[in-house]
Amino acid sequence: MPLGILGGGQLGRMLAHPAALMGIPLLILDSGPNTPAKQVSLPPAPHTQHPDGAFTSAQHIRELAQKADVLTVEIEHVDADVLAQVEADGLCTVQPAPGTIKLIQDKYLQKRHLQDRGIAVAPFAAVPEQPTMDHWKTLERELGMPLMVKSRTMAYDGKGNSPLKSLDAGDIQQTMTTLLGSAGGNKLYAEAWAPFVKEVAVMVVRNVAGQVKSYDAVETIHKDSILRVCFAPLRVAGGHGMSEVNKRAKELAERAVATLDGAGIFGVEMFLMPDGTLDSPRLPNSHTDTLPATGSLMINEIAPRPHNSGHHTIEACETSQFENHLRAILSLPLGSTSLRVPSAAMLNLIGTSESMQPIEDACNAAYGVPGATVHLYGKAECRKGRKMGHVTVTGSSDAQVRERIGPILRAMPDLAASFIDALSTPPQTTATTTGHSHPQPLVGIIMGSDSDLPTLLPAARILDAFKIPYELTICSAHRTPARMVTYAKEAAGRGLRCIIAGAGGAAHLPGMVASETTLPVVGVPVKGSVLDGVDSLYSIVQMPVSTFSSSCPLRQPVADILCPRVRV
Ligand SMILES: Nc1c(C(=O)O)ncn1[C@@H]1O[C@H](COP(=O)(O)O)[C@@H](O)[C@H]1O
Image (cartoon, rainbow, N blue to C red; front, side):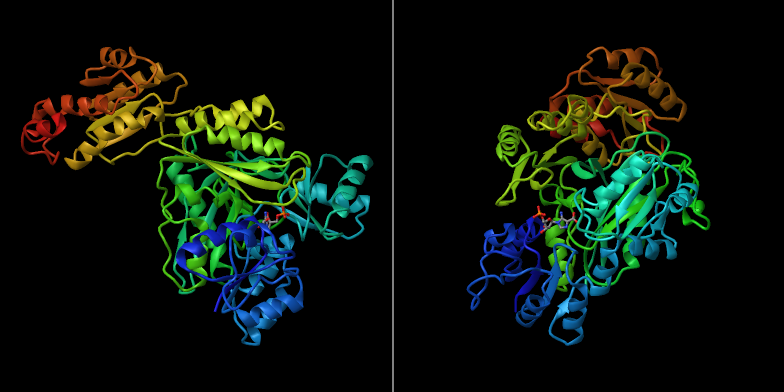
C-alpha cells in the first residue's frame, strides 16, 4: 500500500525524489492536479490520479487513510483531529503522531510544552484576545521592549510575525492590523526580543524503532522573517569552538524532539545567544535562568516535517533529510547524516513580485557556478515572499563556497549590496580556534584561510596514515601575519616539534613565521597545488626521527617508507 502525504508543495516534491529511488509508491493529497509534488510523482496503480482536495478536508484525509499504510505531512496546518481519528479507527498509522502535529500547530502551546520540560526557549507570554494598554504594559514589564508578537497558529514563511517597537498607540495598531489580517486570526502571543549572535538549526530524525540521529548544526540567515541563506556546517568563532556549539545544539535539539511523539524528521530552530543570554527582563520561573552564561542556545520553534534549513542535505550529506524522513516513518534504519563536502550553502529563491524573471536570473547565474544545483519548485504563480526554489552550493572550503554564492546573490534584486557582501565574504574569525586537533599534537598545520585546505589536507592525510599527531589551525584572512607568528610562538611553548605553514595569498608569510620561532617551519607559500602540501610533508618526514618525541608512534626512518610513495 502506498505512503500518503498531506500537502503537495515543495517539501512533498523533494520527498518524491528519494521515494522514486527507493521504489516507494506515493499518494499526495492537495488541491489541484498539478501541485509541485504531484508534478514529479505518478500515482501507483490502480490509482489514476493523486487525490484532489484540501489537506485540511476531513473527508479527503479519511479517503486517503483507506488507501495508504502510513500517512505523513509536509505541512503542519492539517486537520490533526481527523488524523488522530483515522489512526484510532485502525485505518493506517500516522507519522509523526497526530498529537505532536496538533501541539506544534499552536506555537504558544509548543513553547509551553518545551518550557515545562526544562527545554530552553526565549521568554514568552500569551496575548489576550482584546489586549488593552494595561495588558501591553504587563507584557513590557515581563518581556521587555521591543517585543516580537506572533500568531499562535497558521504562521509560516514570515507570515504571522510582527515586531512591536514601543507602546506607542500607532505601533500597537500597526502590529494588530498586520497580525489580525493574517490567516492565524486573533490568537496571538508575544516573545521577548532575542538579541542573538546567530540563528542556528538542527535537523533531528527518529525512526519507528526509536533510533535517533541529528545533522550537524547550520547557520540560518533570515530577512523579513523568511529564511534566505543557510550555511553548513555552522562556524562559530571566539571562546567557544564550533564543535562545542555544534554538540550543544545537537543535544538540545535531540532533547526537545525526545519530548514529542512519533517518527520522522524534525527541524529545530534555535538562537545562539551572546554572553549573558537575554538582555531583557526574564519571566518569573523562566528556565532560561538556568542556562550557562556564555553562548547559550534557546529554541525558537520546531517543525514536525522536513524543513528549509535541511535542504542542503540533498547535495551535501550522505543521506538527505527527505530520504531519512521516509526511512524513519517506514520502519527502515536511518542513513548517515554526515556531511559529504567540507562546506555548503543553500540560497532560497524568493519571489519579489508576480514576475518569475528575477528567479530565472538567479538560476541563470547559478548555472554558471561550479558546485551549484538549482531546484525550481514548479509553482504555478510567483508572488512576493513566496518560496519558488532554492540553490545549493557546495565547495571544498567555506571560503570557496562564499566566493561561489556571490554571483547568485548579486542576481537577486531585493538584496542590498551590504547584505550580499557580508554573506559572500569569508567570515572573519576572532581567534585561531577553527580546525581539527589531536590532544597532544607534535606537528602544527597552520594556514591563512580554509581556502588553503585543499593544498594542505593531503599532507594531513599522510600524517594520519603515519599516526603523527597534529593540529590544524586556520587563522582567517584577518590579521593573518600576526596571528601566524603568535601561533608559532605559542605552539613552541606547547611542545610542538614543527609547523607546516601555508598562506594562499601571501608568499612571504611562512618565511616570516620561520624567522620568528625556533621551531622548524616548513613553508607552503603557493596556494592551489596539492603537491605543495605533499612536498611539505616530505620535508617533515626527512627531519631526523629524533625531532619527534619518543612518544611518537614513528619508530623507523619515515622518509624511507614514505618518499617513494610521495614521489609517485
Ligand atoms: N514552507 C512550508 C512550511 C513552513 O514554513 O511552515 N510548511 C510547509 N511548507 C511548504 O510550503 C508549501 C506551501 O508553499 P506555498 O504557500 O508557496 O504554496 C507546503 O506545501 C510545504 O511544502
